[in-house]
Length: 457
Image 1 (cartoon, one colour):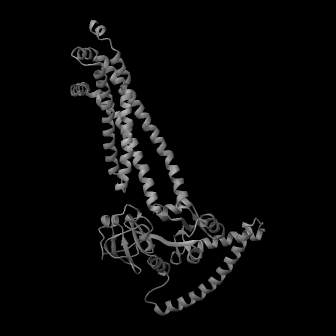
Image 2 (image 1 turned 90 degrees about the vertical axis):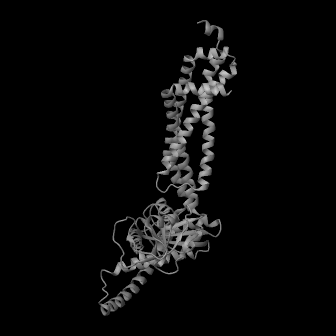
Image 3 (image 1 turned 90 degrees about the horizontal axis):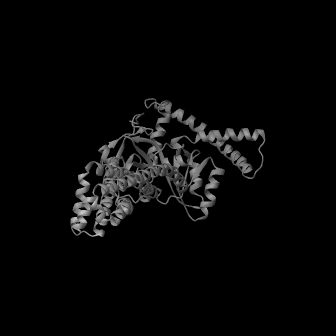
């Protein structure tokens, strides 16, 4: 049998160009499928890990998907801010077991500064590599990737830049101190800078008044603050009245009652006013991560928030499934293209083996005379088909891992590697079958070949 293998390989390497072309075409299809497997597995694994059992996200009105992407995956701009009084109503709801606030607005060298509680770290089972957790404003714990790419470590200080771009207005008056560095966990916290919510309020609350207040004019500042306090008190009373009016109008709408023309105009004005008020970062949070107390909350709480407040409630699971379905259309197209390439390469291998058999028909006859059985001749052709297909699989897998290694942030965790490797072994089995299928007709022809007729020609 070893002799048959040597002969099969010698024939393939004798036609180096044709063999390489067949393998290369097959490898392209395998590489595409392997990349699709990695992408799907990575997305599903990352989404499952980063959702971390969060039942609901509450944020400003806008796109539910955008709210999830910005507050959970931190890859989009927030929909806005929500006021603390509204947040507290959700927190006190009897259907809510636990909540975690999220406050966004700044970054450091492209890494988002997230105002939150230490519960956020427990949610993702984060462990400290060095230092300790933050305990007061302007202290920060940084993710492993943040530390690696910014060279920040425990005890270092840094300042934030407004927005989510590297360049922008820098908050030089407020310096954060790194109290700890997290171990790499393979989730979104690797790329975040975590600090108390009060840090974000302090930084942005200062910016709202720094243009009108001056540190050297202390007396004038005190008088202005007193006057402003009086105005804020009046505004609060007005805002409370507006809340009651809006609640009444929402009640009428929810019960199917028609609004008068004046009520409709008032509703629009109040709604717009409240939305504008919600954008004050020093008095608000960007989103609230909500955990249900019982299954009943999933039915009633999102609807109650969406209908009766100026906020929106979005289910992470529903929105992520919608995102995956949208991405799935593109992946399905690539998968179809990959299988078309594999089918074409299978046909190419079949034609190549058939031509190879026709060119070697006399050599095969001589092998038969030398004592080789029909089954050994069939095995020779089957081995050639499987060798070409498996070689294409191996090269395709190497190419896909090489491409994946250069993709930013796409790191392979142990779970990810095991799951992908299992799927790629299934792909290897399928490729082996394709190799056997491509060699089927040449093998049948070799088995049925009339030895005496071939030698007499």
